[in-house]
Length: 258
Image (tube, rainbow, N blue to C red):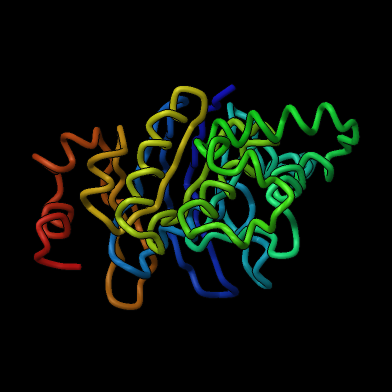
């Protein structure tokens, strides 16, 4: 079931350096929220903080709260593995496990969570590949290496792998930046289908993509030279791209700054 995300006063640090400052943002279930803004303004850092991948970096930490349906994912009582199962992640570069078959790539998370019954794994692998619109392309070669697929297929395989553990949220960090236009369109179509079941947050530098796939857009920028990233405004995508409330957003969208 798709869940609501809320950040309250979220700041992200790398050691003593503040990368993101005081972001309060609500992301509704069964919607696509695009995070846009210039390079280096903290979009990916913010995204990674939602499922606690930010803290994997030595010295990294956060201040503030990240709530998943009102539960603080950073609370000491919360299991970080469970957080990352509920909040899946798809990265910029397709990263299938290179030594694993297509089948084993999708089943990896399930096996990690203790699923051993073959019929259960078979069903989950097929359902996940179907959900990622990849089943018809790979059903006759499930035992072949995932690394042998095309770039677009590899990215959909990574999405299938994330979906297999039945998350409620799917985070996507520039999922199409390494793909050709046809593969990009396939991923965008897939995002449109998946939002009926998941809460999706996507970081993208492609303004056209943000306007095509998202319901809501959040614009980030640097507070100033050498300063952390801040959330400037968030609104319905149609409004952000037609009548943004802040001149900084307008300047970025129209290409005056970037």
